[in-house]
Length: 497
Image (cartoon, rainbow, N blue to C red):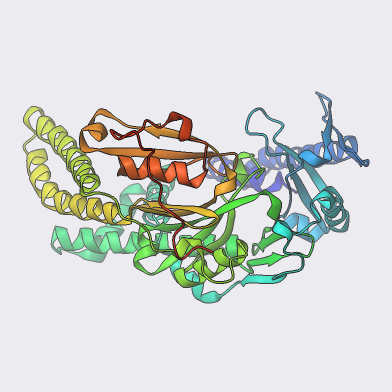
C-alpha cells in the first residue's frame, strides 16, 4: 500500500503523455503492468521485512534482529533507552498497527534510533511500557504531584498557524509548481494569458500587490492544513510513573514519551510573527531525545504555538514550579554597548546587500540602481527596528534552581536551564567585544542543543553569573581584581524559589 501513492502518481503522468500520442489503450498496456508489479513488489518487501524483524526484552537488554540483505543484531542496555515514540499514519491506523521508534540519545553514528515497523498497536503500547519501566519514578521526589493533564488542544490556537515564515514559502512553492506543471502540459502561455485577463490594464504595482496577497492566502491555507495535520488533538500529560506524554496528529498520530528525570529545563520560543500576536511555544531541554532526521524538529516540542500566558503556565507545570515560571522571571538587561553591536551588524548586512546591487547595476543595467535605493528605504529602517528589538530581548537572571537567559528577535528564545544540569562553561570574547567590555558565556549541558548562551553581557556580570550559577566550576579560572578580591556574584533572583 505504501508504494501505491508514488507509483500511482508516476503512472498517471506517464499514462497521460502516452495517451496523448498513442491512445488510452496503448497507455494502459504500458502503464498498468509496471504499476501492478511495483505495488506487489513493495508489498512483498514489506512483508519480508516484517517477518525477518524480531525483538526480545530481557531484564537487562533490548534485543533487535532485523535486515534483509544486511542482517543487523542490536542489543541495547535498557538503562540507555531514553525515549519510545509511537507513530501511525492513516494506513497503519486502518491496520491497527504502529511504528515504534526507540531512542538511545546517541548523537553520533546511526544507532541513535531503532525503528520497529509495524507492530500491533497493543503490542507497541506494551513494549513502550516495558522499555520505560526503569523510569517509573517521579522526578525530584514529588511523588504523585500534579499528575494528569497539563495542556489540551484548543481550536483557537489555529490562528497562530499562518503567522509563520512557512506561509510565504508555501505560497511561492505553489506558484512555482503551477508554472512548472503548466509547462509540462504545454499550457504555460494560456496560464499567463488567463492571469493577465483577471487584472486587465491595472497598474503594475497594484497587480503585484494583489498577486502577492493571493499567494499569501494560498500559503496561509496550506500552512493551516499542515498545522492541523500535525497538532490536532494535542495533549500533554504527566503520568504517574514520572514521564511526560505528548499525543498529537490528525491523519498520522504520534505519541511521544519523555522521562522527567531526563528533563534539564525548558525553552520558550517566540517566532517573530507569532510573538507580535502574543504567541509562544514550549520546547523541552532534555537528554536522550530521538536523533533521527524526522524526529529532530518535533520530539522536543511540548506545546505548539499558543498564547504566551498559557505557554508560561505549561512551562511552570512541566518544571513543577507552583508559583511562577522561570521563563517569566524579570531579567537583568545588558549594556548599551550590546545595542551598538546589533545596530552595526544589521546596518552592515544592508550595506553589503546594497553594494552588490549597485555594482551589478553599474555593470549590467541601471534598473538595479533604482532597486538599490528603493530597497534601502525599506531595509535600513527595518534593520534598525530589528536590531533594537534584539537588544531589548537580551537578558539573564538566576533563580534558586535555574539559569534563565533570553536573546533573539526573529526567533526569540528564553531558556530556563537547571543549574545542576550545567557541566561546563565556554567564555567567548571577540576583539570587538573586548573593546566594548562585553563577553558571551555559554552554559554547556548534556541536554538539548548542548550549550545555551548569555550573549553580550558586561564582562564582570557575565563571569559573575557563570561563577554563581555553579559555584566552584569557573572559580579556578577567574582572575582577581586589583584589590585581589574575587569576582562578586549576584544572588538568586527574588522571583526564584
